[in-house]
Length: 236
Image (cartoon, rainbow, N blue to C red):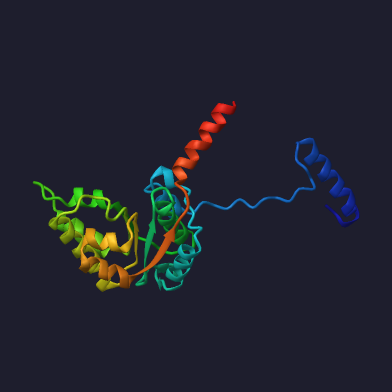
């Protein structure tokens, strides 16, 4: 377009507004930035149970831990930080108070913060079931993989049946992570006195030193959600 063909800005704006209106678009609305999904977060969510795929670490103590771990990360390829040594969390609460939700939310928050993260998650019951000796299975190798993993979630510690063998497995796993100062997220329904009785003094002592305790209280959220669904169904 030549200079003498230029149109006033106001005229162009009105034409554009008319075009947008004809297409059902409000010309006065601000465009919403569409964030690209993080590939690392997408990969993590494929491993996170569906129940917790949108979990958020919204408890102040858990969010603070995420910030500390992210800040302490070691620089890696491309400048992205990788998880390093750090404190662990012991998330304590009765059934349904959101302990597992907070743990998976912490993983999602770390990845969103740009931390390169290799992590694993298991319940205590699944841990013992997987490591129990059986033909053709290298339980020792799997135990060492869990012990060396940069971030590990151990859910429901103290919920599985206890024995000398489970106490030894727990001791070896926690002791290795304690010595290497590897961040570990542990959830439990038990207070420290009951947990100590269940997992032994040696494990409880290490957990006491290596973790910051987060106590979740309140009603059972699962029962509250079920009650609300029943109320809605009855009112329909």
